[in-house]
Image (cartoon, rainbow, N blue to C red):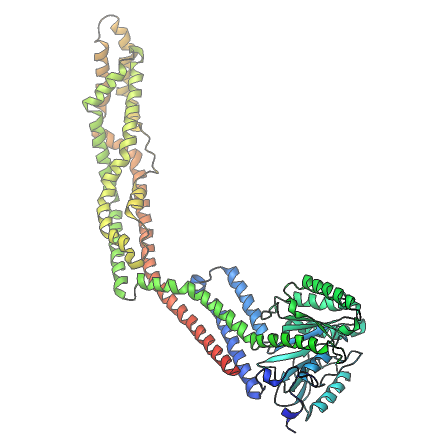
Length: 629
């Protein structure tokens, strides 16, 4: 007998509820199964490729440098792969024991296949798949075959075999796979009848059902109305709680894909009682499962004599059609979409960087050679100035000595000192003069030392630096980073702002020398005593002579010697530090020039890998479309 004629193609054998004309007749052939497995494997391979990409050094550096984020992505990929390996698109019927799940599924199939009755009849997870061949297969908890498949010739003999299996005590059997022609089950959709949650002696069956729930793409929760309103804490509520606990693992599940069937509605005889119960139940369900659509909380009675039976069943049929249509190939679609989203996100990071790298670094070796040439010129300046440190220090000391000597021996300096001494008197004049000389020379040092340093050292290399670095700063060596900018960094680094040249130290050294000290005494108390007898000059003349004594002792040779002893080491150290920093930045610039070219190659490699992922995804999508055509 041709199995395709083994029963009418309706949901229900009496009521024209769901004819084959409502959907395309789809046959689950061996080719169809193998093509799905092939697509499943290709999609898993895509995830594995992304996992490999996560460990790629270029990906880590340029796309996802954060270790925590990579770990999170890794965990998501593993979760997605686990979900994708769940081959079936399961529409799971769940509820408490004897709520009528099996009877409803039989009505959907249009024939009595699953055992039904007042006592618990579903003792295993029954998975119903569309196929041209009638077949029963029994599997263990690892989804491995326990025995050879059982071929059957008619749906009647299939029903008898299933009734026998329900009574068998073989504890190895966890799953019963039922293959028959089910026109409305397109793609890899599978209708699953699960053992109910019931009394304590049915704990094992309940656990079997709970363990299977995370495999679902959609649920039909069957609520047993006569059983305390269907919401017993030890029965229906635990099912919903289990689903909620499993949501993280149910990557392909949409919270809206749930139908609540209030079965055995005919047991509520009073219209008022029915209305109040229905409204209360809807509120309770919405409070437990907020995403529930109002149209998916439905009344149902499987008693044909109940006058509202046809209308109720049609409402359920229409919602089920929508659910089935939405979930055709859903698991593949969800994961392909997730891969596309990830790859697109990565491309949005890599593509602009690649374009920028192409524009800046260029693809020719000419740009790189030009950059390296300019870097070499900078390095030559560094080498030249490093060899000339002693000469630079000496040049600085000569210039300070000349300018300082010229300043203190200028008539204007002497006139300033005389002017300040007008308010002094003979006994205090010597100390006042020393104080004035120290104050004025410190002021000169504060305003001239750094300026002379810049003039004698910085400007010697500034012109060369500008000639070389100027074009680099303007063009950024076609994108290569210039680590220093002339106006904002070079001069600031080289000016010895960190050196504290204590103003007046040079002068103090000379003022403490014996011959100068004698001059101070002469202009002090001794001169005051001689003046009383008329043997000395007037006060102004005394002041001029005191100034001359001090300034005469400050020769260029002595000034330079003092400066050299005090400051040459500090200035030399400052120059060396500035040049070392310049050398470090030259090395960084050379490294950056090479890195930018290397980065461009890294971006190109990453871009190629992402392109391959996109191409693989596109091929999978095309094959999915062909499967459903």
